[in-house]
Length: 260
Image 1 (cartoon, rainbow, N blue to C red):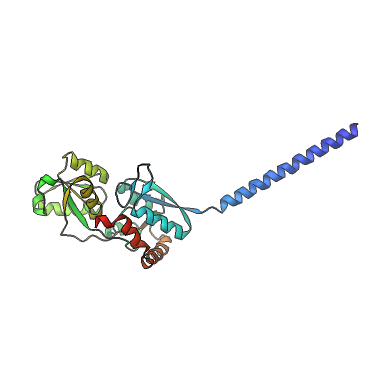
Image 2: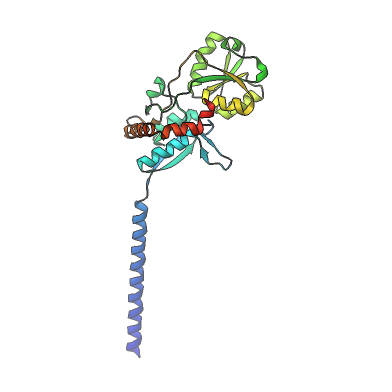
């Protein structure tokens, strides 16, 4: 009897060891599967800039830049991860290595090119001044003595600072485009100065009026990267392929056609 019990104990121990080995193998398989997951491409944006980037009613990112970013990530073989932040913090996020790229309707100015690298331009809009319909502001000359709102860190901020010296208006800077519209509706500013594509959307949506800035031709929009990023050349190739295939125009028709 004792012998039989001993054999039983040995059998149980061996079975336990086999199960443990099996679990270990399963863990190893799971780890292998996990290691084969796509690498993450971290992108920063400022989701207050429709139709380029904003959030839908459920809080999901949407817009021209968002769709284009997903296509770029797909072609690169990465999983796209998007972080929302203030526009004036985007360059710093690239410089600190917090993100791999930025898509936020960002113009490829010479000043920015000193701090980050850009892809080739993928869109060009221009600028627009918008105001309430009863404000009777139809030209730069009508801006004298007015308060013009701009978004911090944008090319419009730079442009407004220069124009204010010649046309005698005050510049008020706010954190994002949605606040700019709130300021306009509450009469805390007289005019908003912004990207034309974005401005036309607000004109159609809220009944504002506007006129194009006749004085400047802004550089086009590009994807921004940390200096010497290896992604620049690959993204340029992808943008070229998307343009040749017509997919870039399809995205513009989807998101920007009503604003042009």
